[in-house]
Image (cartoon, rainbow, N blue to C red):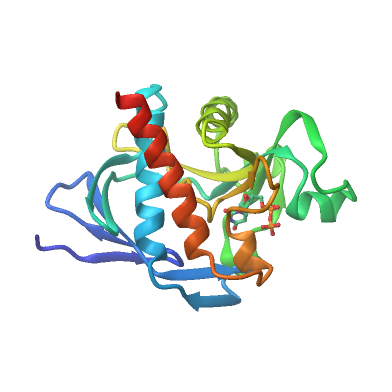
Length: 241
Ligand code: UDP
């Protein structure tokens, strides 16, 4: 396959493919935090995240939640629909953690009565600032209708993900999504859903099974990501019988 590197990301590289509206993603063995200021090679991470996000996206597709994922190509590569990414990080919180606890002084672990959606402007130079609906309109990042659609999809995705993780004894604390516009102009879920982009707490021990282990220097993330993958795989096999 004759392909060219289109974009070099923090966790994955993006290549063209034989088809004009299809891209190949290569998941990298790289961990970053603090907007790239903390950065390490973590061998095996690319394969794990490629497989985890593929299992999750295929399950979301089964539930009619449109997304960019087409198929897994190899251990660390997948094919996705080409989209133009909307420069918004859409964060949804079910439980208080991370920047929410720091900003609002809410105790970590507080269960939020209703999910709370936040937006961040995806711009490395500006350090991804927290923004609201009016900033999004001012910057023309999305129209009113598009933003309403993104919010309703995010809530739908939350319900689907809560169930996926609940089935493997994991609490979905919060997560970050990115959306893009496909060749037909439809807004679809893009990027990834992995322990890099979600806070996942083990139901019985309440310990983190996600990137907080790396952010807080609590140890090696590989066995933890492996645990998430193997629980998801085992659950998938249970379902197939
Ligand atoms: N998140 C992400 N990428 C970012 C920032 C946040 O995937 O650049 C995810 C993060 O893993 C968590 C959720 O979004 O699941 C909320 O993150 P938060 O705002 O609490 O930021 P943090 O505490 O990580 O700085």
